Image (tube, rainbow, N blue to C red; front, side, top):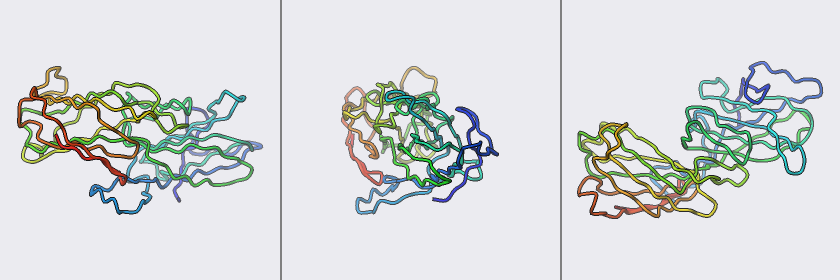
Length: 292
């Protein structure tokens, strides 16, 4: 995993391109060039072997935090290092540390800002927006100049809505309001850690007016396999409080690294008739497929 980072943090929140080891410190390089991308295959080929993918192909930000234990129960962040895709060496993170034991957390994502990582058990994102997200959590021992090669795993579940009928020309946005997932992530468990109410607005693509369209939303699943409730609204304007068309999908099963896909005719009948949805899930992503 070869990549290089020119931004090494000298405090919890700032980075410096020219950080030099202080007396008693050791140069440490974290290589995070690859991620375990098990569900990126759009064809949902269950026979395809698991592969790693360059991190730059799926993520635009990398945030790394380094922690030490103050005692048996408390953990303190001592450094944070942030990269975005414009960095020449996106994927390799270089810093300096004193000899000792550390806990590290890396998250790679597509959010608008850096993740907040004060604690490894409560990681949040700007405006609580969840994107395709990968992570690494582990403990390291630093006793010499060294490099740690890390493979990140996907942290999220995806729900994909496939609208088979043409979208009416007066509809310009799709609103998704969903509960049952989490917008905050616990890297120590690999699951969501709060009960969130998430809202996402997706712009209707021009192609949707003459063919089917697809919309993806993400969340961090809970360890107890809690199901989602999703309210989907078709809006003329993103700021509109009134839906021209709407449907509610109950009991949506989700799993980390799985796509749950619902497909069907969204506009072809009165939403009040409550037509059901079909559903599915895959591991390359894995996916569950349903129709509505």
